Length: 91
Image (tube, rainbow, N blue to C red; front, side, top):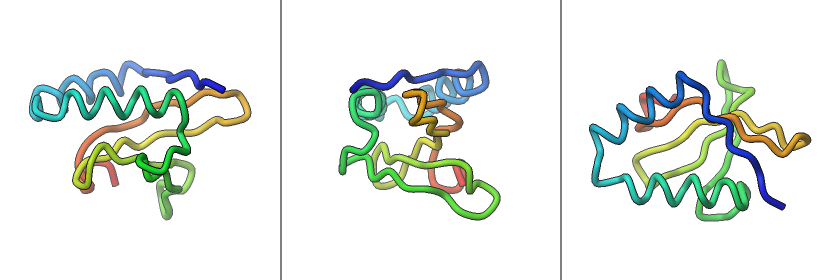
């Protein structure tokens, strides 16, 4: 089963800024998005639910330092991307 990634205008702006600052991560970032679309539960993404004020969101890892926060709507097979950045920026 394949999932649909939903890119909001706000996320697109954040992602563009992230790639400009971290051009060396572009291929890892794109690979993460591809894997997320194919299988959001793949172990290398380290998908986990967030807590506290972000409890309705989940996070996946680009690498050990950078994350993408997202809203999973599994019942509709959609994944809405919310934010991308390092641990402090995302959480």
